[in-house]
Amino acid sequence: MRYRTIGNTGIQVSPYCLGAMMFGAWGNPDHEEGVRIIHRALAAGINFVDTADVYSRGESEEIVAKALKGRRDSVVLATKVHGQMGDNPHDPNQQGNSRRWIIHEVEQSLRRLGTDYIDLYQVHRPDPDTDISETLSALSDLVHSGKVRAIGSSTFPAEQIVEAQWAAERGGFQSFRCEQPPYSLFARGIESAVLPTCERYGMGVIAWSPLGGGWLTGRYRKDRDVDMTTGRAARLPARFDPGIPQNRAKMDVIEQLEEVAAACGTSLTHLAIAFVITHPAVTSAIIGPRTMEQLEDLLDGVDVELDDATLDRLDQVVPPGANMNPADAGWEPPAISQPWRRRRPPKLRSAGT
Image 1 (cartoon, rainbow, N blue to C red):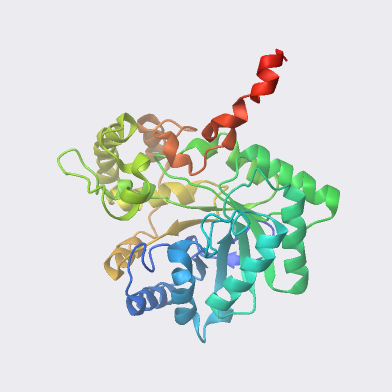
Image 2 (tube, rainbow, N blue to C red):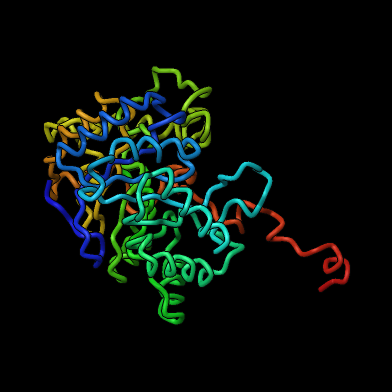
């Protein structure tokens, strides 16, 4: 592994980050196999593990804790906060980016992870109901207390990344040191603004879903039925339903990408991840194996490098700066997803103002 620095933090991490989303009920419920997968990744030189409180409702963090027992100080450990985690799914205060929730939930993550500090604590998604200064103030207190070493954002649009940087400077708060966006050959939207913005502010980039949720393994093809009742397809049908035109278009593109991979003497999977970590703004790509076999295949591609001719060909197949399916962006602004935010209250409408 040729290690890279997360932004300007001085923290050195491997170009592959082991994502733990598939450990637990969302993927592989076998805790012992999850531990073995993590140990194999560490033995291969991966020193960066990323999880989140919401992954299998804390179960992923617990599996990571078992695997890192006795090895904690040699691993850069990242987790996230934002999603609904309380006992009452209808309680609006048991989620989000408020000081109240962050201070509560970091303690739960520390307990589940079996550690007294988190190397990288990330805000999992934007929260339109919480001022960013409120969020940064709470996170700064965690850094000052020693419970968190560095803070970051995940799936923030460029304008909110800039707003957070300005708020940190104005308020004297800790700033986000990295961003974790979706990035793959099928989701290149961040190339237009998010990646240049991160470079401008010296932020690291930890790319999630470099395989497009499995699309770029060749798993989804025209001649195969897609099981929409289980796994990620069941949780995120907009990204996997072959009845959606953008998803059908992916199946055509996969055939072209496989031709590019064959010309390079590599697999589609290895081509896809090499593409992501080739971008100069990217620090690490998150790999999320569910089984040991998947991990071994991913490790085989760690030395794959793409030349300019191959990158030019990929630009022709999948144009830069766009997502093939808008659902792959990972977050939709509330101004779009919530119609009421675009409509005046009835009284104002009737008054003609």
